[in-house]
Length: 387
Image (cartoon, rainbow, N blue to C red):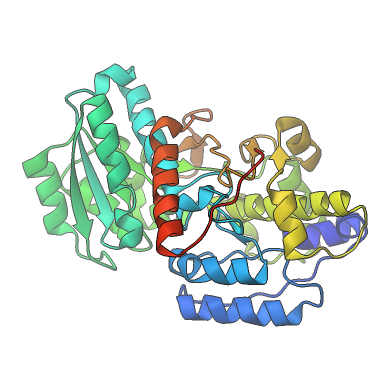
């Protein structure tokens, strides 16, 4: 829809119209890779960027993107160590990563408690999908527990997460945490909220990841989801000029791609945020090459490494508040942008906080250590970055 808006409203980007295709991947890595290859062959100028929308596929495409000179943009998923652009020149977990999200969740709990010093002695349960995705933030929680003096325990949930009765009995009756971090996926999320309610664990003591914080996660849970919190790197709602433009130019004319009731929903707005980052990188690439023409992946890679979306630029895009300010560099492909927390009031997601900074004193050393290990294992000589 956002690409279509640019074509209809603006005639594309600087007069260059956008073309795209959709692939149904069913979240299977091999189908994502097949989609990547299809799109790569279909483009006469080469892919300017690619969104895998899958952590497994991201891992599989890291070296392919490097070889093909196609930026792989993984906003809010994939390899957190991809933030180190010296080792991963074509991988861009722009805005934030799972590791950064974990630090903001703990900072949010500190806000709820009245200060970070109040974390000492608290018990936090980490109820997570029993997969690489679910386990990814455990090392970050370990460092935060050491830093702030809280205790945490992991409670893995087997996929797909339909049966969680015993898990929540352990959580609520045996461990008795002060808070629960919910790192779920798909049907696991509403089932977790239902089981938490059944054992009388309050929803306002559960903080979900951004893949546990959509309308699809809470509406099926019914009243059990009311007052539940979740992280987000974008806001909800349709009261943003860019979303209003999409309604006026597309949905009012019956040309939108989604059910109109989903306009302004979490996943709708998240997709708009993703589209803005890629298309603004194309815009910058055209400026940098001095021509309004289709740009290559290599040219967009250079543009991404200087991409800055401050509030002044976001205002021109009609997206102030929809997503945070972003600044990417050669060394930092993640941007380390702040996050905000939303609360489900029973009918809609409402903002519970302003943007909360992540703790890069914990995350960045982990990123650099992991990236250095990857470089050593794969015989990669890290680039020297000017910034």
